[in-house]
Amino acid sequence: MQVNRWDQRSDGPLTEAALQQKLTSLGYDPLPGSNPTGAIISARVHHRERAEAVVAGLLKVTIDDESVILTAGDIVVVPRDCARRIEPVGSSPVLCIEGVCRSTRD
Image 1 (cartoon, rainbow, N blue to C red):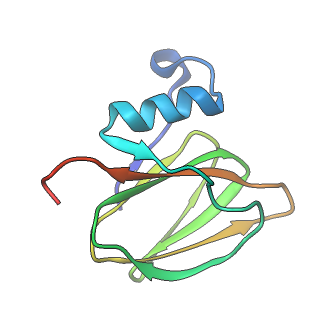
Image 2: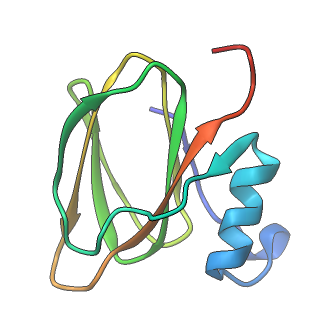
């Protein structure tokens, strides 16, 4: 699973705007209306590559049968045509941003 971790030395302070900018620089268009805090999103398959970025909290992302726990600043790539399920972990609120790959490679 491809996870891009926030590096404050090269990425600067972590903010929602900075994370959106990083998504954009990686080739993803952030979607408006990110997932509601605390919502479990059942497995979904999308026909375009996506990325899930965590602004705050802990988020468990399962892609097909592989899972990873993301923390603030982490971005995971969700390949096209893969089943993706997300759920918050712990008691802290989770804020995340979903992005869709703008490239024609998918």
